[in-house]
Length: 450
Image (cartoon, rainbow, N blue to C red; front, top):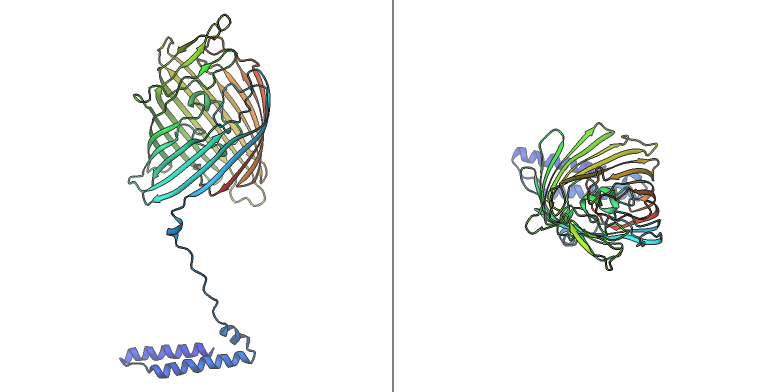
């Protein structure tokens, strides 16, 4: 208390000196402060709690933090592992590159463990103008791949953003997502059937523009240098890979894509995300086996190579999640996507259409539990390189934390008659499968798009 009074008196003397234009007596001021300090110390010695609290020395200063500049040279690094134990009656008719592969022989079942994918991610802000990201994957332990490696601008004017490197196209909703963002163990059939076994990705350049509208609307334009070889259709087995929509003559005709993405916040509980997509390029066609009964080895013929191809797509994502819920954890998400493809006439084949779609629902039924169901249908209509196939699947996911989850997955696939197509007949048209999936993530992994 005495110290506070002394400080007030000193302030008053200084103010008076400023008003009178004089100079305060420094010696007198120092003497008064010294007396106040001694008085407080004496009171503390007599057991005055207030004085004791006032006389406690200041805590030692915290050690200085390391400079941010010394940390910024190191990117954020993370690793994600997806491991499975599964059973399937036969190989699926269409296999995405990051689907679990038990390496079943045609017409025979397979059972056992598999490492579906290992992903290593590195990301960092390069400078005030660019952000860099690199994603390396090992799908089914089949070799190291560069899934994505690109730079994104951060400070372009007029709501523009540019992206260059090798990355997944913004076409559709599922194509741009990594495996650990998926709600099911396998990707939808439309991805492999129309976008390729590895999805629509490769060396590319992209420019996007965020429109100044009351809702969120982003327009994308992309040029992709996709290069691929035609898959081979073997006897009593579907093609080793889906017939590629794009990838032929990429050095002279790159794949072009345009997308429009819109997001609408429908109140506090509902949100809607939708997109329209278009892409054009050239198909690699199919290498088909013919007359394999009377000739060994089987003669092959090419069909549908270098046909100009266009894709038309639409996708929808609707989510309900109550706001400010303290007593429970519930949410509901509906997602659907449709893709239609047109082949121009060429290489002994006529002009034709094919298409497909999927729809799924994922419900959060408890804090850590999610239940999902999905229906896939492709070959509507069928074409020379695509037969009608449908699949029903369910998943039950236990989200242990943000860094680990366990999922049970069941599916039944039904492949239709391939008569009238260039595809051979697939043995065992009905094919069930079951997988138990474990996924763990370590390190700092950046957030993905909504």
